Image (cartoon, rainbow, N blue to C red; front, side):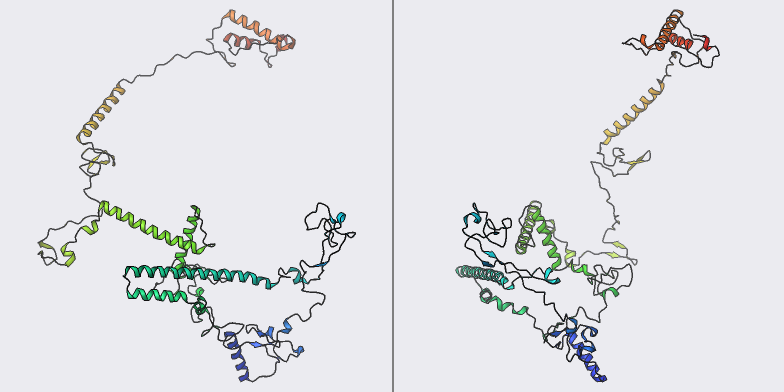
Length: 536
């Protein structure tokens, strides 16, 4: 693919070059190698892999795509952590007052604060740290793994491998121990068949086999080692190209949604099609079938158990959650069967006790039935009336007739007790007599009330104090009381003119008599009266 020069090629050479490129993309041919011996990805387009003409490249390479020159000032080295360079014998001026090192001050000292610092004791002077300064490039400043030694991770791998080996050894010992106990128990009883012996021997042999050899079947060897991939015997593709794509099964805009980023279509694109003919029913069909449904039930059980106080977590301890779920299903099935047996023991099993009729078991009978030409039964069997889908002749609440057997005043009821309430209890003839007596008594009371009805008593209206400007003609006033009211009105007027004559404690009365009201009218100043200035 990455040719060195753009020299002229014949049609046959060009065709062979295209076939070779397709084989490299499919993983059937080894990838092209550059000058440094590195494989070139066959999926890189030609405009990126082809070198410019002015470079005069003799061999295929991707060197023109990489950074040619690197800045010599930049470095990829890192700090030497924990390195010490010099340790003095006595305290030096400018050193740390706590430990005596020259590379930091007292505030930045990481050693435990001494009771008496090295500045005054000149003893146990701390060594100087190795201080380095690097000029890092853009990537070096942002590399979170810069300075990490990968060889240190070998210890973590060794710990995990040792733990896994101990676990395998323990499980193998436990399995062998259980099989030996089972064999000893069966030999003591003397009732072991040849098939069971063969199975136990086979289990023992399987347990003794090294697990590393048993796991070799999971390895998949590639026929050709290429950058693009390629498995043994087949080419790694997403789907068969002859199959119809998901988004082409139903071209309706309102049909199932297709997500091009994840290549998923959750709903069924053709729900009305025949299930026997369609090969794809949406991605959701995998979530409600097979092990997906079992895993969903396991997850729900783990959540509910955790809410009820069980120390269970499906992601942290999946084996424990699976074991608890299996025990839960076994206990639930036992409880269900125990409840069923208890009910059958108490009430019996009608389905197994009643014997089926002979004609149903054998499909024939000795009863003779005669039919006419139209297929109607003449003799040999009574004609059966067709039954409706509704319940008939069902009496409830001690009634002897059905609901709707009696009608009165546009209401249905029971004929046995003449009640119009559906869920009422039957009272028989006594209830009918009581209802009739109550109706007669109600009629008598209504007639008595109508006869004894009297007209309301009319009360004589009392004349109240004349308020307002209109004075009735028949108003009668007491002259003595009127004179006293006029005198009080004059005193009130004087108090209004002279505030000094107002008393400290004033007794107030809201009751106004007609004489006082008449005195107020007489003393009131009318602003439209032309003689108002001569009144006072």
